[in-house]
Length: 338
Image (cartoon, rainbow, N blue to C red; front, top):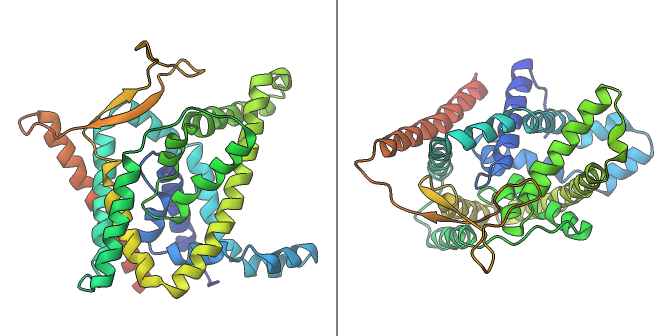
């Protein structure tokens, strides 16, 4: 799997990492779809699968060069660097855009997923009854998840570790959004907003040589939560990659069929025309989190009015999303040929 990469390959891989990081942050969008469409999903899974007993022995023996080659370190390193940078840059921009231009952002993502489905399915054997059955199973799974109701926030560290394991599903399982799963588990704001902001603020304070945060119990709690969540994510990433590596090796067609179905079923999560339903008490009062933000309970989806001007803008951005995916896929294929 290890290969010689040119500078342009490294830059393009870094950009893919940026895209995966941004996709993982947005509820309803899966970073695994980015990996799948961009053509490096299998290399990604097989590289993660190399984090095993053999790599541990190489590390303990100090054979760092052999370890780097064994785990496809150049590929994994550049990709994860892009994801990390994305969390403090691109994903922040996305948060801003979703807050102010929600319909157009969701429309673009909806179009990108539609384009992804077309790109993945165009060379897949659709006439096989077995494949069609597994596609249907995937669709049913994606639809059922999109209609589940979110739980309440829980900062118990064991539960946070479990959330970490589950959250990486968006990176390894195309169509299953790790961020959306965190919303269902009730910990999206805690783990991907509050904790990340606490880390960002802490880094800024350290650069200013300001260590007063060590007396801030809430900041320290959030950093502890983020550390446990990160540990769970790493554990889940390595564990899931071993399972998926085996499944891809022995049941590739079935796996691809379920993935195509699951991505299709997940379209309901990113359907652009929806209203937020906020959690309320038994008395009908809206529930707020620790930051004073309303707690999301679910979405109410609806068909847009054909005479509404915003509807046509939404359709325009859906087309833009489709073209973005197909253009990137075309460019990547052309670059590989050259």
